[in-house]
Image (tube, rainbow, N blue to C red):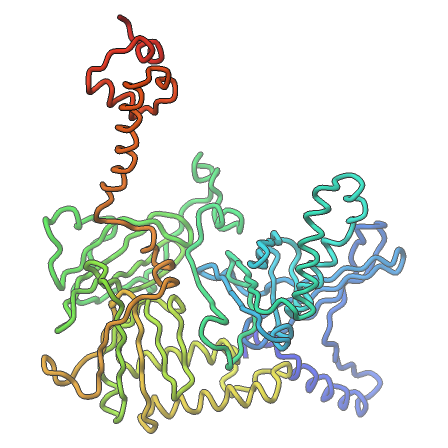
Length: 536
């Protein structure tokens, strides 16, 4: 067992060890000492009275999440106390944002980990809590803490800033209604650039209720996390560049990878299939220069896709994704695949980043953006979903699926049943239906009878919803007929010109477009000349 596993054991395991140590202590000799402490105590300085107080540290692991340190300070002299949490895990490669739509009282009981760099939002009232001290609570506890903080000093605000206090009263009333359960549904979200904050999921979450999205950090966010010193890099006073060890570099690739730092994309007139191209990019992990490799692959009876891979020699960051090309189709595409025998699991499948994947019989619903684009087999895709979910629910090192003592028995039984069905499907022992809904029609399942129709695959087009159009940015895009938008304005300009010719007193109210029309008509008027500084 590694040092991290020893330090961050589940609370249930620690209690069992403490009981075992207690039994050993009862039968031990007087000169033997058995350390049965679960909480570490450290003498530290009180920042209120500058006397010595006690800080208690508890290192533990949260089911569905990762390791944290719970800290509590108390001073016996001035009775000052404080508690907070800190993430004991590493800064993740990407930031994360969790969104939860609350529609019942049970949602208030979900656990929430809010790190010191996390932004908490109540979207319905546009309330944002900036980064502060770390907190480990549930949804109700976080909301009541926000309510308590906003209510403090409200009486003083009414005397000094009555307008601000009146606006804040409206927000406080809405928060109270939310906590009373009279404002369902409403949405909360947490956004953590370090990727170490979290909202507890539930196996019963329906589509759109709970979402998790990962994103690449900006340079400013990396600087705030201490991953990059922008000023030091700009003036050359930063630490020297590091290079990844040779054994971690990609070797023996077929076809061979281009040499680092070589841009062979612009050298060719067009991109050809099955050739690896390289172009310079910026690493999203450390913001240093790196290379991105790409290769165009033609999927039979579908379209061309681009496989992209990024590896940073400075920090070791690596990623891969699939991009589809071509124009945006007029309609989305829904593919329904009936997996009836083990051979169907070997079919190739392309799941784009915009695709939603549903398996009703397995109670599996993967929202768009949860995982990036993937080109693999049905078995490989389901295996990845199972492994990712299992590590999120029970932890990376929990191979037995115990989940710790804080995982309720009912919840654990639900997850066990879910993973059992999913494993049976992966092993080819349970037939199921796979549905892929892609508003960009960029997903694909291999047909065994192509180009003839496959009786196990049904492909249909559907009209995109307003939300899908909004998410893709298509509601604000106009590629045809945009030149006609200027016609009403132009017609108004000609109307103003006619009015000005008939009544010179209306010259002062002319728009710039109408004045230009007068100039084009070579209409000379002293008032127009005077307004625009023209000589006689």
